[in-house]
Length: 234
Image (tube, rainbow, N blue to C red; front, side, top):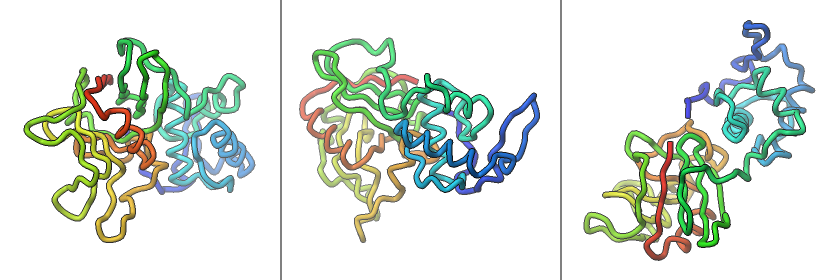
């Protein structure tokens, strides 16, 4: 997934492409921005308050929408994205079809292009899905199996980075230290290092593991209690 514009820059960084010309975001009216935010929220993209201000949360929601709708993941409400967003055919952000070429049967599927994960049971039913953050430089596409690797435990309820963070509900699936876990939390106060609404984007990068929400990490902990196939695609 292409890295989108730096989060938190505000509406002035948003562009709308019209006839090949980039127009500043303030060319969009507040009501248009509100309409986009309301529509993003309705489609499960988590844009936050409908206030007409296009900030970090709205940009992240736009990336999730672009990802789910096979658009260039710029994080900007360009003319193509805006039109697709308001169309009746717009696809939801939070419910996505499992990508082709990932096999069949019980498995976990990771799409690095969508920054998304699916938990699929033996009948092929999706039992849980949601956004992730990973780092393709460390985790390569391929098929893995959850379990102990390199003499290290398969699952660790409160794993640590060796410093100030916990990697809760750590489930290992690739050598040697790569696994799923909740967004890291500070040992000092239990707070996550970033918000859940950044999941499903690549505005953050892990050190090789798959970051998920606290509830998703609990689901994966249970789902991958035994050896479970994990399919990673680009």
